[in-house]
Length: 158
Length: 248
Image (cartoon, rainbow over all chains, first blue to last red; front, side, top):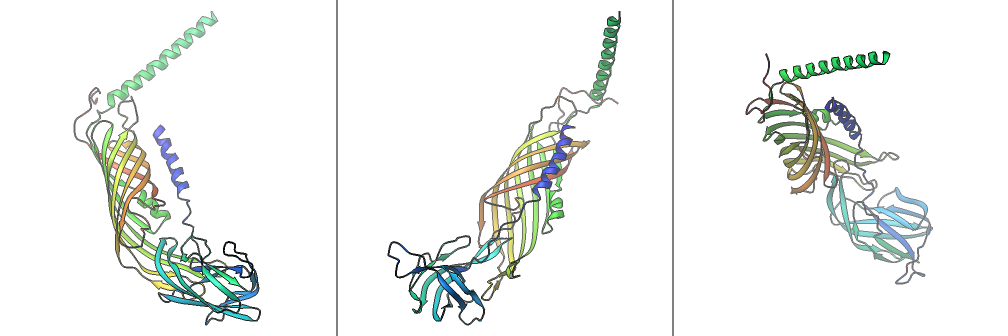
């Protein structure tokens, strides 16, 4: 009888184990992360955050915005999948001033899991920009990898 | 006087119970067939059919063979295949934006070999139940591909693609704990829980197996599984000593 009781126990264990969740998948993992800093108060060893007010950001050639009239000190800008290497450009509008910032990047296909599917890993090679709002930029961490939350580009503003 | 009567009554009842117990034991001993030390059992694992019940993506079949090396040790081999047909899509709930799509197919076979040790100590003759602790080495070969996948962008254009057929060879080690009981003469029912460690996975593509045949879904190099098997033991070989012959 002992073994037959254990058979019953086994079915309970299997029933519980079948309730496991599938993998937790992350989204928006193809965006370059920008932080805004004050060009006037930042020093070589100490960056000072700066908040841009009433900012809108559009992809070049797009009518819908990524951000619309926001106050921001950090943004996530999605990169294009179109070509490799490719350049993804955005227009940053702060009140009546406009700047264009372009990211020259390469990408590599990667696979996460059956539940989460494929993703692209990116590497930001160069950042091009105009200088009405932006003073300078620095690539802090060029890799954009799945599951990482690291600032890629520092943007110093006037 | 009353006390003496009670004592005699107790002794009488005890004597009757003892006689009944002895009689039953004697009957059991007389009707028990001798166990065979050597044995071969062929089995079918029902767990793939159970998995299919709540996970329609996986279809498999596992056959097993068990050879009794000694009274307490079995050599075990398991052979099987698994087919996976997966179609997944993820949608961002608030914007209904398509995040990803994946159609995935895999076909593979596996072989496991190892030993089971019966740790069930039983004095009852004819009780062929087993409590098993065992180890397995597993080897699987599978071919898999994705004929369609989509990476959602959410702002720029989405990316769609497909992957060619690629192969994966996996090696793993299992620790097994299970029970096996003789339901009818020579017919056994058994279950086991298994902890598996992936030793090596050789692949020639970025695609990772959704599940390794015989091992299951692997997470951080580990997998857990179960089996629920029916077995038929083919009677042959030497009979065990010190047991009474069958009474007709």
